[in-house]
View 1 (cartoon, rainbow, N blue to C red):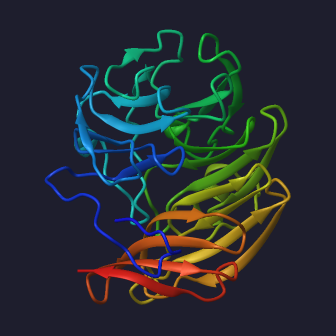
View 2 (view 1 turned 30 degrees about the vertical axis):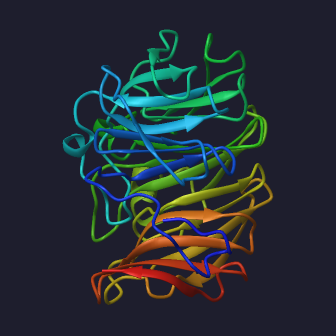
View 3 (view 1 turned 120 degrees about the horizontal axis):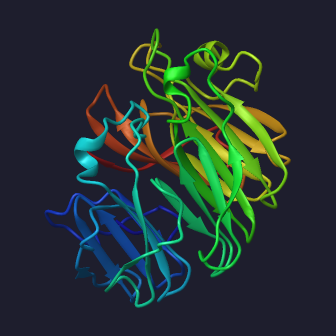
Length: 325
């Protein structure tokens, strides 16, 4: 679906059997959609889509393009659909791993980035040279287009459960040339709570602990003590810029569950709770253009419908823009 009037109306761009779960646009014309063993590309703003061959290295779990020609992807070892089960917030909590791939022809062909650290799970680039790679409980950085990588951040060791230390899955989003937001997804759940914690950096050197799920993380990492995150389960995060991001959580114990929103500013040093997303119980994706204007997609468990919800006042009020179900 696409909108050109801020969500007042939506038009279908593509329909088919592909199980698409990610869309990546670099401008108004060039975009890619991936998921379920399929990769589609548009060069005319979505008016038409063409199917690209899936790389032989495995099923793509994420794609990130820097230009119409240059892009990166993570290919899972085997099927992403069977490698792990998503949490209620829609995130995978079992490490998938795989290989980092690079394309220079818009996704028609892919080649392995042989210098990349083992078991990549997510990747993003601010430009052709500066990029980040997430492996279990670690973040790596390159400043030369992936030729060399240095360890930028290691998640604090889980002293409360050493058997799971070093296995958390990092979801990363680049912001500007050197900024990054990281959401580490833990494994397992206890009393309707699932471990997660977030970090941010504006330059790749100085890192700031942003938030955590305190009920579980206080047992896993009792010395960390980050502010409480939005919800007992992790949800989507949207990087606005190097200094601010929006976090959407999921809290199932309350009736059908609620989707609280939290805005981080000052490179994650300041947090504000902005209430709950109306009409959505389980958030699946979020996109904020500014701290005030954003969208969240998710499911209404009461009606079994999927909604696009929009806010223009930093999440204080929400308007349903599109419903299907």
